[in-house]
Amino acid sequence: MKAWEKNVREVVPYTPGEQPNEPNMIKLNTNENPYPPSPKVEEAWRKLNLSAMRLYPDPTADMLVKAIAEEYGMKKEQVFVGVGSDDVLAMAFQAFFNSEWPILFPDITYSFYDVWAELFKIPYRCPKLNERLEIEKNDYLQRNGGIVFPNPNAPTGVELSLENIEEIVRKNQDVVVIVDEAYVDFGARSALPLVEKYDNLLVVQTFSKSRSMAGMRIGYAFGSEALIKYLNDVKYSFNSYTMNRTSLALGAAAVRDRKYFEETVQKIQQTREWTKQELKKLGFEFADSKANFIFATHPRYEAKELFEALRREHIYVRYFDKPRINQYLRITIGTPQEMEILVEFLKKYIKK
Image 1 (cartoon, rainbow, N blue to C red):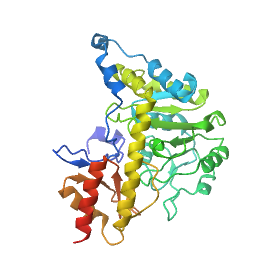
Image 2 (spheres, helix red, strand yellow):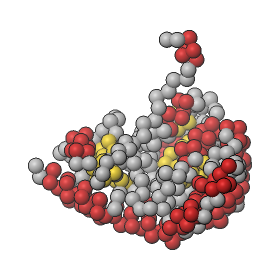
Image 3 (cartoon, rainbow, N blue to C red):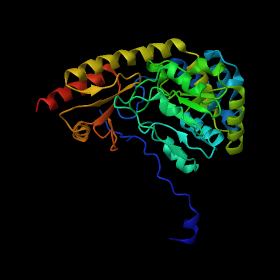
């Protein structure tokens, strides 16, 4: 080891889903939206003033913050935006999780949480999901330094009821509780109404899933004015210009097209429910997903075997080689045509 390496902060990095680039592939492994963004996004893109790109963007991101606040009936002072919800969450970890007590998040959940905790040297504990892959509310009523969990959870797709979320927030008012709602638009109830009741609640959402803009990297959060001020303090101490001009303009256009957003979400929900029925016929087992994916296992087939068989056919799903979930596949909901091809392959494979 070289002398300077002794001072390197070593972490085990987050492993993103595979990003293959093949003709005619079916990509169902990273929970992307199979439909394009709103047509209003393309209109906004064509109207961009390219000469203005020589100038820094608005550090307050006012154009986007205002559009989000208006759409959700909030004040601008209750909205924070960042470069994807990962950026928002990372800043929230730095801003709010500074107690000597461990933060809490599920043992099976979004795998960036433990990466940030290790990176920022935050102690943490991971209460286990129950046998039905559900969060146990009572596990989050112990003393802690903060709480974070997705709803619906990832990669399981299971929803925690709004009543249970409120009890967790109400009984932990001495710490910040973060509800990560990356998939909430696909059928779960948002915790957003609780923001007005509890000043310790931060609700985080993203444009990457339901608004078809994973490539643009836009995330946002709702919270009390005090929470948002603290988040902005961290942002301005790290990078004042987190959002570029293109993201601000296109994001504002997307959030204002509610009709297209609702139509797209409905199509994905309908395809998800069809896929559930077809997978059940083939013997797959899974919880009732409220997300844009299904977390499925088959009692007679190894998940890794199925994953590799699908991959050979250029059908990509997500496999997690981790304890308790290494017999599951996470299958993103694509277009009806893509899901039909997936199901037809599985029918032939399972009959072998």
